[in-house]
Image (cartoon, rainbow, N blue to C red; front, side, top):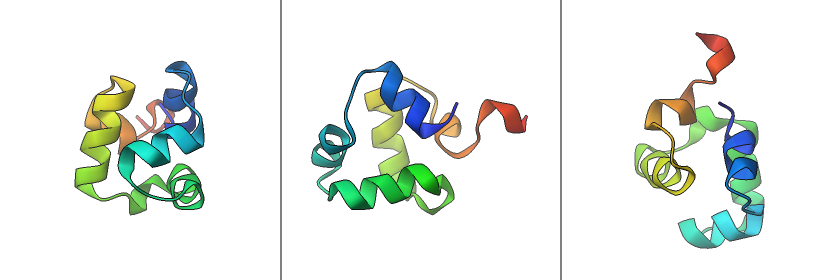
Length: 64
């Protein structure tokens, strides 16, 4: 599952997620484009927020 898809499934805006992480919206938007650059701590927080496995943050389902 891609990060943008996970966010939209939970009906969050980029700004809401950025606020949750304590970062700017622009920084979060960059995470969506390149999830490989996300820290493990941020990935864990995103996985909790989006109710997905942390592996889903780094590996989209179409890469299996």
